[in-house]
Length: 157
Image 1: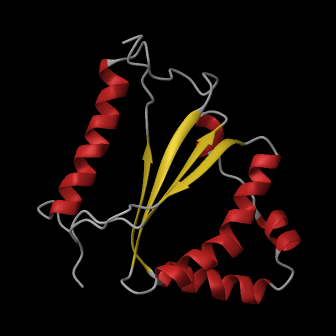
Image 2: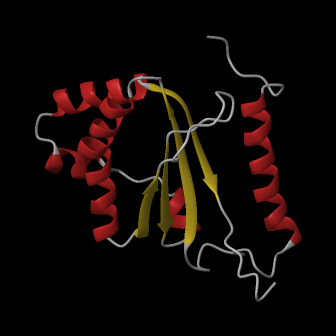
């Protein structure tokens, strides 16, 4: 499988989302966060899984990644989390299988370098199994995309 180029429909679509997100920050500074203290910072995480492997991938996600996110929510770093999958599938170039939205406390927390090793050791005493399962989860991915989003209140815009 060759690396995507900017000429593929998926790359163009992802590039458009990125440009629109960045444009929102530049053209609407009154509605976009201006500092890390401004409050909730939503990010959508898109996953495209190899055909036929979604069930295996989601089980590994729920077993090994979601509990870490729940712990970060308990610690106050995450305000809200939600998950979605498309009802129908799109064409291969624009297909995604799973979207996980995290609303971080603020942009600084969302981008912070954090040491999750103590959380991992607490949740997964058998680190060898955990690391092997996480490696498998990532092997099943075809594509992963993190998209910070700007919520708009259209009544105020």
